[in-house]
Length: 240
Image 1: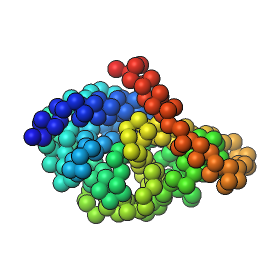
Image 2: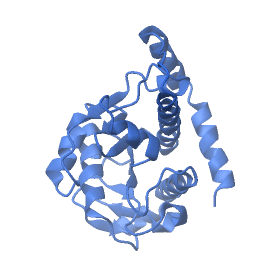
Image 3: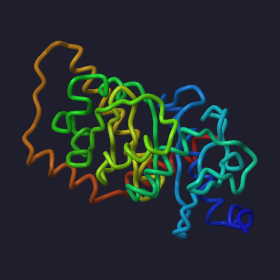
Image 4: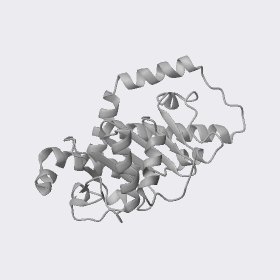
């Protein structure tokens, strides 16, 4: 039954989209070795989800490399193994935070901001940053590698339902209802973090906008997601 689901047209499309998001992340410099993971739930409330396998560069992952797992970490379909830290973080975020698509990276500029006293992006600075106003959570308590279920559950609980979590001294988790929306947020989150790090490096005072303007930009950005869909389709046409 699991193999039949894995090969169904709907799941095959999800596998292709997840593999595309991984290759795009590698193309945009958001990957790190063979570490970190992207996942997406099957749309059947079964608790099963698709995940990139252990040991492959994101740039080489194709749809047939994606693995189907359950919340206990059992591989249900696919030809690859999975990494335990992926299961502990992703299973918890899917289950506790209720997120359909979960992208976890150590992308450089966002991770750099997790090392600062603020721990996160200032969402009142650049226009790209303002789309995340009111959508961030900060988990400032780094406890080492996520090698048990309790740590994944702690991270998921700290998210408090937010779309984006900055994990202190670690990296970020970006979530969404769909792969294309989540990837668009991941890409623009790193661009916003890059702009802030570059601005901080000048030593000049930073000039944020008011909360009302930042909230307006966030609302405007989330009200019209066609640009996210077009971006992902452009990646589909140009990345192999």
